[in-house]
Image (tube, rainbow, N blue to C red; front, side):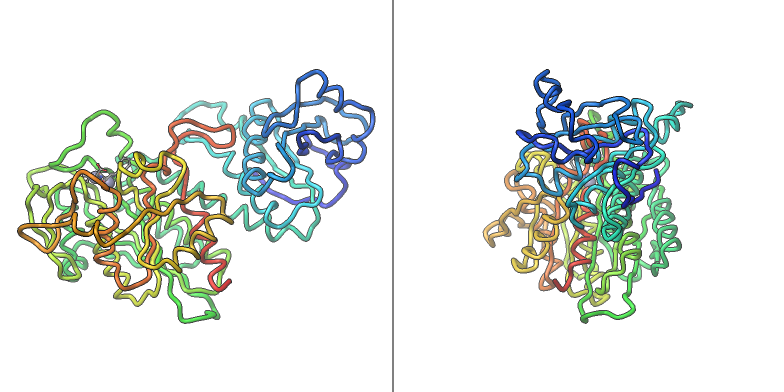
Length: 487
Ligand code: BES
Ligand code: ZN
Ligand code: ZN
């Protein structure tokens, strides 16, 4: 789908469908000039077909005095509650519902658009396009795609619109990676995807193999990996601005478990196929690095992706095994299914050794985060309130919901091992918090934010603006954080 901005008058835009947003309790004031007269909108309202409610829409054929073949009104809800969140979704709803009706070219007219709205609309349109149909052989697939999406707005918004396209496409790259089943996306294949991203956007790239990691003493990561025939890697993607505005160095760390069986602490078979998405944090980091390379913020950013497959075999870790982390701390593996924190611990230590000054990790870490927050908020944890406040600001602009969970020192006491420095699990309660505390034992004292995306990285139900499946959560906030680094 081609994305473009068109600054001519909406009457002249020659497309299959021209849409505009109409708010509740308003007349046709947001419509293109030529379509404001005639009382048609009042008629649609009176008929009960359209009230302006959010994302409700109605299609008029052969509108008078317009070059477009159809005029589409989409509800914007109440005008004072209409923000970039609603704009992003409205664009997605338009793309998803109209392409199914044989429409190939779609335009959205928005008077008084701002850069924030233009960016969100581009994101929403691109995100709306994506489907998890890569492995379906439906020959009609291509026919259901849009050719072009045009925003009818002043030329001055093109930079913001283009930024939205880049971010939206990065999020789709994440979704494509996360959607890939584990037989087609092993740790080695994830490393290849990272290398391709690096080559495409001129990022630095280094991939540490098993031997290199053994030399560094990454016993936690290698312990998880040892049950699988697919070797583990630590992927490093580097972005360096031409003129860094400070000596800050941001690390993005993503959990890359390409499949999580649980290992010897095996998961039940019901829903286990889902565990291909246990690399959603990795997917977000790799794609965000690609977007960052294109948008060129003035802060140094490095992506760190530990990637393994958590399998069972004669070589797999056993409950009770004791491994030594790169940081030197010993860990008693009480549960082999709590593997994410083990691989992240060594990746975090490695990032610190590379001299990063701030870290954000994204991980499908605990089922418990869904029990605590449901599917609507990312769980956030930190050792530095000020840094988290900055991050939350970025998530608000990016339109990704985040909710902070506590990290009082008392919770740390849930992590007690009789035989090693730390166990890899706490007790039955506060599971997401003890997982975060485990990571913090390795992150301190570097300012760090941990995002538990286990309940937000996969959508069980599709939305009108987004297909079901991988959500690509995290990408937009990562990119926004880097773009607004010194703001
Ligand atoms: N990958 C899982 C977490 C997960 C659960 C992600 C559901 C997505 C959906 C993680 O490795 C895991 O298994 N965590 C355990 C931790 C427990 C053993 C302390 C869990 O949440 O059950
Ligand atoms: Zn697990
Ligand atoms: Zn896992």
